[in-house]
Length: 373
Image (cartoon, rainbow, N blue to C red; front, side):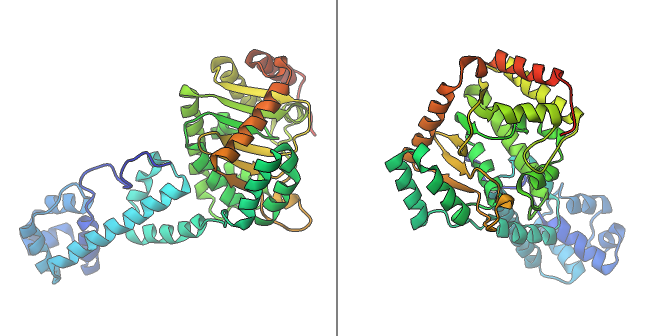
């Protein structure tokens, strides 16, 4: 996701943390700004600017403030160093989580204690699953030897046993989507990204994976990052998605989205309208509707990698296995999946992968009325 910029929470140049340290010591003493100003010969208005971070004190003024609090000036210098190290650690963690930079300023004004707690909690989420082990290399070898179509059963077994968990998958998908190259998908549910702001993302997560996310606050950032990435792709690339026509018809007529979630009619209609709007206005956004079963689900970008999902979600399995996806980034393997996608895409009748005709079909399905599943 990195764009070459420095990992910092703030864009402003001051970014000083002496102010919060002064405020903390002043409040600990029970002094007002006027009390502190009288003790160090500085106006209360200037002290207020220092505490807010809008002014940086000279060393002589800092020395006077230190004397008033009976601490060494090095106390503030060390505080500044520790705070900047903590912000840098938090920025690095947010980068790994796929949290879009446009939201990082929300973290900059948190206390050091809150930032430290977030770093500790988020690091638990960013511990990677073991992806590049012998079995993963074996999966790559299977794909290269047999091709995608004949490897599905073995890939599914490996993903069930050793694959990414739902939270790992959400994180990896965000990182994968951040690449601005062409994307291709074979998915069994109509993607919510075109109308993501309409949906309760926690409900979507629960309905997709049948479990609670380990940190719900990440969902909005992940979804926002994915939508932003989709729009960047459409600026200069192509996004193609293959859906099973029967399941999409069921969704548009009943609101059934997957096995465990049903949306209200108004939400489904608005979701469909946003998707239709993209189809009619953006030639680079394409949908193909297949009448065949989908033996595998995948999300890929040729220059970045592929996430291969099992046909079912973890909660649907009787054996209790929790793995649901494998990530591949080796160029030859990624190209095999792209070739497989292209073969499936070309097998779809032209009238089921032409934007205007797919949009017409979706509108026709909506016009049939809405019924409870």
